[in-house]
Image 1: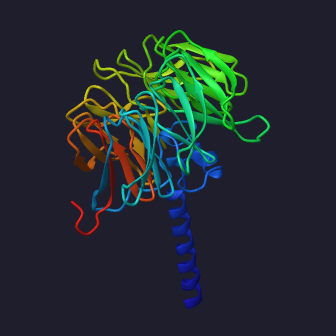
Image 2: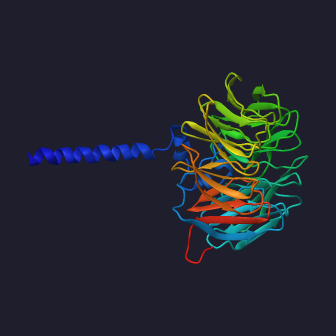
Image 3: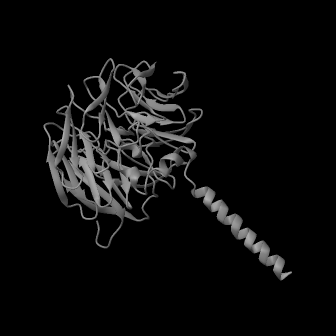
Length: 396
């Protein structure tokens, strides 16, 4: 009898462990990215990875959360941070890109450009790559901020760069959109142009990359699908209004909002719209986050929205006191972090939208939060970069 009980206990423990493993298993859409990234790599670029799914590869920092430090720049911070190890990289409208110590908030170095730096940086190999309002894409040494190369477009660059592997797998290429209505593909090693793709109006967001394709929207009211290897056009999907944000791409579908108050799910193979989400008559500027069965996005109706990604059915909304132009970030354990123009940073549960924490900064937050090493980093229009994490003794 004792032997039978022992076997049953062992089986129960094994089944319980298997259940726990299933719960902690990342969504299938992200498994391939996880195989090619080390822990923390999802913080090294805008929206966490090439498909721009807006997901972190680590959980929410344990409560209670508090302000760890704040770093002062000379103007509004609309850029989103990229984080690698103990270094935070972020731009400011004071025309600088900053490298900040993640632990202390001390400045390590700064690089001056000729225009506001709203573009979020990309950490690629040993480079930090970002655009500026002066129309130049810069590549600097991530270690010391020394310029490696620059590429000039014909108008300002507000969106973040993305990357693709070279066809021979020997290195990478960088993709960037510009207000000159073009998306460019450049060699990451030296900044030489590989191809360019021309649209009918400005490119404000970042191109998403998935399955060898670049997907991006423009102010001409179209969503484009382009071969990432040679720049050949594959689809042009008219959506009827300017697209200011970036699309998230998963399993051949693009999720994106536009200025005529609609959020869409588009089939990238056929160019057809699978569903349309429309709540109130306010534009969608925020880029979406996609995880599990959900897609989450902000709106200028002062709310954060969550819909079922298969059907577009509304799941919940979280009311704030200002426009939600900030793009949400979803943690690996099912929390959503997002800023609002009401000057607050919010944390809510992904499944229910229940608010679990907020912090009042006081001025608009339009950038996307970043999370790495148990630290949440976000910029504000008050000109400061803020870091939050487990509250330390004496921390306000």
